[in-house]
Length: 357
Ligand code: ATP
Image 1: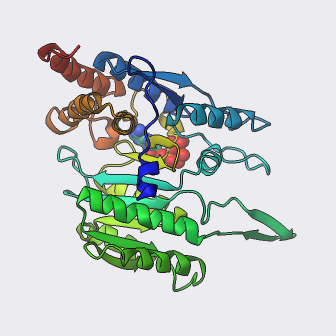
Image 2: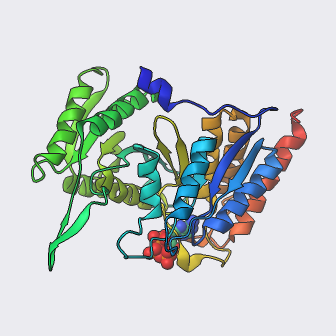
């Protein structure tokens, strides 16, 4: 479909096959995680250059945000840490939400797959969460109509509901997935979630080979904790998406493991799946670098650097599943640097034994 083509559009490589990518380190553990990405890329010989852009949530103006958006528009692709949204002041936007909205990154994709080497609450999970990423409860349209009465608008459009549903079904078709579950609260939010659900059902009719069912968000949370293996691909609005993503990441090993992808028709932004800042663990050499490194692997796949994506992914997998070099969040005692050094060790073995140069 034309949509499919646009979503998978890859920016043109510069002369010599190199790409320039925007790097938004964000706050908390973001900057140290980005240093690990650069270090791993250096050892793997990845042909990617970074344009570092700082976003400052404490700034008085939104200039930093505008600069970041301009940079991503220029490069097409970004890797991102989360920016702390400290300010409750009106007129200062959440950098994270504003960026996704401005770039129209309408879908977020999170593949929650268990690592056999991680002892987690559940094993053998392989769920793909597809989340509407730009509207719903995150429309940022709140106002105090009279003193003590705040109204917050949840915006659901048929256009965006259809784009995300279509993305989910096309994804399922391409990835050989068999079932899609639409998550909603249409029994209470009859118009907004009703539209989202109806749109999913309409799109589902075009894909008879993929099973479609739906589930109410509260039951979904219970089912995820008690019988998570029933889920294959899940599609939902923005707020349910962030909650469900955190539940499933928690089931497979926490905030430090998985990565998430944000796509629109023109741009792509890669980041850790649960979008945490991890401020309390910053600078202590204990944060798990795997989530950000997985985001870097996603980015390389998107850019078409398959070889480099694969060798880094293999090194991550061996480190977590075979060598079991685990940071404290996974129950281990390794430092962030131990994990990165082990990954680099595998990369060095690989690049030494191949004739790649
Ligand atoms: P803080 O930012 O002060 O840690 P928070 O409540 O904002 O507190 P989040 O950033 O939302 O925490 O992260 C949620 C939890 O996940 C925290 O306990 C955090 O330490 C942990 N966490 C997040 N990222 C990682 C990581 N990469 N490695 C290990 N733990 C992580």
